[in-house]
View 1 (cartoon, rainbow, N blue to C red):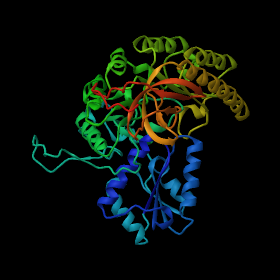
View 2 (view 1 turned 60 degrees about the horizontal axis):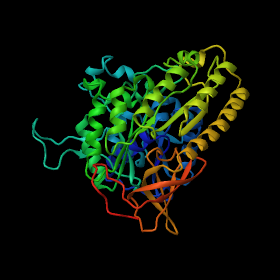
View 3 (view 1 turned 180 degrees about the vertical axis):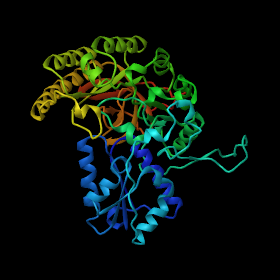
View 4 (view 1 turned 30 degrees about the horizontal axis):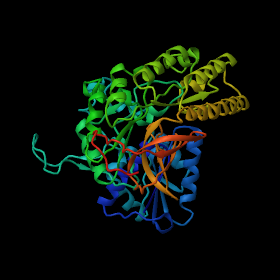
Length: 480
């Protein structure tokens, strides 16, 4: 069988759990051209992602393979998707635990009725602290507890239900699933469910397994990482678990994503900017800078508050990396609101900026709000702000010329040049750093380099005469 993953890093973790469950059930992964079954782990976030998922499902069966839809689009629409695409069978999250038997049935020519979609927030208690005892399927939380009496741990620790599909030196690690926020434009909580944290012991065990698989950077993902621990009775649990993850042997650095500005505590800023091995990288979900628009989005903050938050981060670490995404054309957005966002972007000095045009999402409050902005006007605003974002990101990269950065080497480019990422550059979305080294480097090396130039958001750097410290502060072998 073949497994296709679309969407975000959270989906990548879910796919690797599915791959492990299928392997345990006797299935073998193959290229799509040789597969009897193609399992597509879909994305259902925004219209463009949904269309990509549908296109992939339609093309997956062109070679005669049976097609199965899983993931967010499948969970969100269930029977509706099955009716619209009879070419594919549809699985929900509740089917993941028995995925091997489901695909066995596909090969036997069986069909089953797709689930009726519903609000998965209702499956768990409203009180976060009551959720750990409630149970239920949570994709990507794939630690299998051994069958031993309570209090007795196996010598090898819990088994990680995950099979790596990408052999790179960076891997996502899911710390929680779901979301309790009620943003008026977002449908994710309805199909991903209420917020549930993974126990710290599971995270540390999985981090150790990933390190043994050659991973050097952990990319912590969730729908809202700043809420981590609230259902486990400790709102500051992330501040305690970050040093533990950074101390896992073999892990050079830990990066946190999906931070909510309204929940970013001073203590978390301190840990993220002072803990060896934890990258001072702030992926902040601002979404806009106009207080009026943000309130309509059912979010908090405004330009002044956000600039104040960035000041706190940079006081703690002047060279910290910051990225954010912004929605343009939200219902009721005026020229004055766009100007406020323009002013914030200009003042904020962000390393990475994503500009997205608003689109109605089924079942969200924003879809029925007055003041819908015409599609052509949304496109114009997106184009204008995206051009500004490109210019500002290039300026911010140019500001880093002369700085010393720690770069994780991910590939050899030939002629003593290597490709990697500095601390302010997250995988796939924030630019890269091309390193010149007089000595030979290997994929997975962490080297210290001085930035010599910038091309857009990308950096050019040269390895200096001293090594980068590891995540635990020990000296590394000289690479330059």
